[in-house]
Image (cartoon, rainbow, N blue to C red; front, top):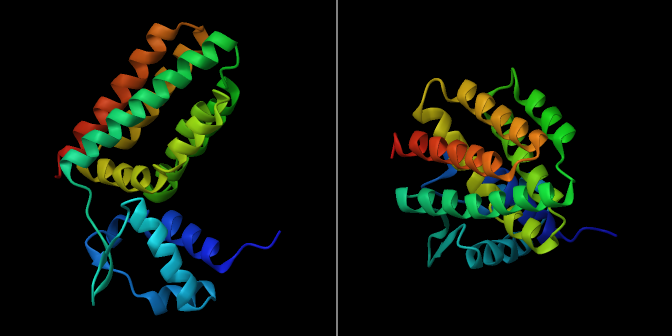
Length: 206
């Protein structure tokens, strides 16, 4: 099935443009975006309306679409929501005996030796694997809506602590180890410790 111009624009804006920390605090150029992906400005505007409804952009009269910076409060809220979803997913996969340990180890290996952006993309994939494994489509779709904010906030965390990359790998390893052991308590604790450390790194430069 062919992908509509609006859907192409939406995917590009949400997963590429809005996931770039450098875009925060700037206005989008509709014509530039249209030229990049080969569509007219109408699909771009339709996609921006969708993103505005998700509060990822602000439509300012006579100025266009503005990409707001993530505030400290928004970073805290994002981490809180991620914690709820990821801990639930961990409990669900352990109860069902479907913890995706091998997939998580592969995703963790993919993070090593990468540039910051690729590292954070792999980081997001690591967590998404766990959430999807819970087998709850609504949960997975809800988590997916956080992707743009997750990538941006992840980049912010790397900027906030020089040793954050190695710390993330260690924290991810702890999550995998706990899941492999099959005990929900340590798995919840490992997820919480990882997200708390991520938030501290993010807030260090806010």
